[in-house]
Each structure stands twice: as C-alpha cells, then as structure tokens.
Image (cartoon, one colour):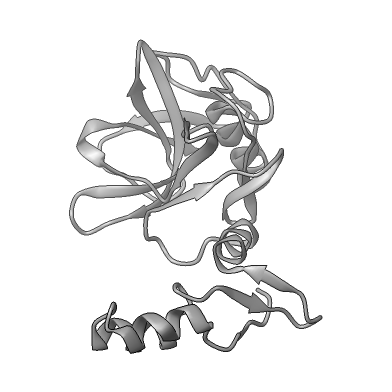
Length: 204
C-alpha cells in the first residue's frame, strides 16, 4: 500500500475544538485519527481524499477478515483477493450469469487457478461438477469449500475464506452488491452461519 503522511490538521477542525463544539476526547481523536483527516499526501506529493485513499487500499488487497462495505468504482474493481484470485465487481445492478462478474464466475476462476480444475453445474439445487475428481456435499466447512446460500428462488455461490469460532464462515464472493444514493456498494468478508449453507468440497 502507498506510504501515507498525515497532513496538518485543518483550521476547521481546530476551530471546532476551540469553540467547544467537540469534546476533549473527540479533539484528541480528530488530531490523531486518519479517519477524520481531510486528506493524505502521497509519496509524489499528490493530495487525495482520505475516504478515496482507504477504498483504493481495499482494492489493492483486503486486510484482515473484518466485514466492510465498500464503494465500487468502474469495471473490474478488485474488491477482495484470496490465494491470489481476485474478486471482480463493476458498478450497476445484478450481474446474473455474467462470465466475469457473476457469483459463479468467481467460483469457477478460483477453482481453475488454485486447483487446476473446471467447475460447472453451478445451478440452483444442483451439486457442482468438476473436470477432475469429485465434488461432494459436506457437513462441516473448510477453507476453499464451495458455498451455496439461498438467494431469492436460486443460489448464490461463494468460497469459504475462513472458518470462524462462532459457527460462522467468512466468504469471498462476487455480485453481492446493491445501489444506494447513486453508488454501487458491496460487502466484503461477509459472514454467514455455516449451518444455513450448503457446502461442497473437491475430492481428487
């Protein structure tokens, strides 16, 4: 990620503290927190908005496993990455069965790049089929498993990114997005209860 140096605190924030509009603790956070900063200065001297910088960092790579809501910008926006496989998003509505942006497209790309197999039959009520080995339904989740969750009258497909201690799993997925205030938003590192999912595992 880019090296960021925090800009000097803006006069407006200082004024709020002097006038008493912000509590003492809030002033301390305003001075110390990158979140409340007006902007950042990059290595080449460019000043960018703090929120934009944060979103661009997410595009490079999602740190940790905390759930995040991010703003999608343009096409082939990299919202997440797992084992080197990128989850692509684009602005706009549901991507259905699109060969690049659909939920099934990510599962296919992940299994092709990580396991070297082609996965098909990613349809509602069906068990995925692999070009090599056998994909079987399993009871307990494991990293890399294929996940099917209910979505309307069909399935939404994803990959298990992490198995959590509280009975949930963290997903990496595509096409989990919505429109709000003229923007396309997506949830990264979404958690769901493992017991409410169908889980499938490749056995070579």
